[in-house]
Length: 209
Image (cartoon, rainbow, N blue to C red; front, top):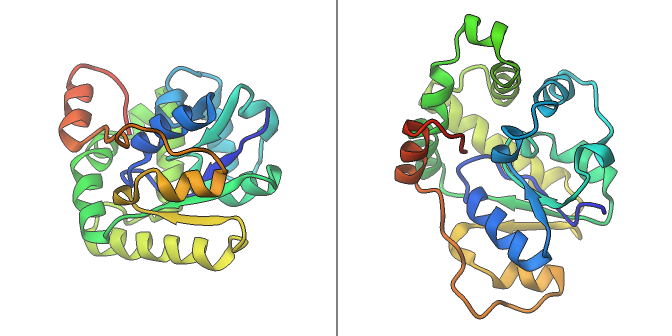
């Protein structure tokens, strides 16, 4: 089984909703940060990948039909090269809204990752390398927004145009279904993992992104 969709969008761009939607459309599992918590062998592989040592992507995504969100999104280019028939799906949202959502969720979690956590927790080490790859100044609003805009611009400039679909959460099913050649479901597009959902999940001790 090969990935049919490689999500190039970063976290907090509707990626959890995309996960649910793509699983509905493709009938298989969609890789997402929440999957990493259940695959303890994966964080060291992602850490190595962000340092330039790429894993066997076929083995990494065995059993999955699509992938979105961090950590996959930040390495969309080598992953999309490994799956040359996959759609490259760039999920985006307004930079100000993205910053507000990310700073209220992901960045709050990352702010608690200190040197001790990095020493003891492979996920913390992976996440630290991943965020620093995005920008070492992710805690600063202006720097994070600039990095976010530059990241999306780079995807637009470097992804093969015939494989790229840019999508915003308000776009719903239609653009994705058209590119995948599947019927539009007769149901509302899923909207999941709001900031409130994320904070409730974290307070209950569960992962999310």
